[in-house]
Amino acid sequence: MPVLRMCFGRSPVTLSARYQAAFSGRESGFDANVRYYLLPLGSYFNLAPQVGWRSLDRPGQGTISGVELGVQAIFSLSPKSADVRLSHTLTAPNSSQETSITTLAVSYALTAELRLGSRLEWRRSPLFDDYRVGILLDFAL
Image (cartoon, rainbow, N blue to C red; front, side, top):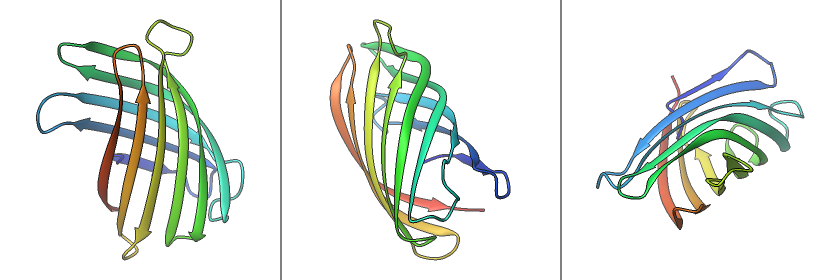
């Protein structure tokens, strides 16, 4: 989940940044991106191209870092309450380290500030080919 997600009023532009690390120390990563939502925020469906930077570090296997390009589709089951997000990104495209990440996330707002969700992520790169499952608790300030 993003450590920081900034919306600029009713602007269709958002900025987010995130750091994550495995408890085992097997992996860590950082990413930051800008998304531009093509339809008005709060719509039942939206599409957002994104551009940013990602770094994935797996001790013993190496580090992949570079420009990240992608797109995210959002399906709001109930605006501001429940949504399904599907995204696909490429990190370091057209390089020997090109990494593809596909993510499916489902979340539900328990309150205006608290969201509960789950996330399934498939990752393919020259260094690894794996998937991750996560349970998310997102608190908005």
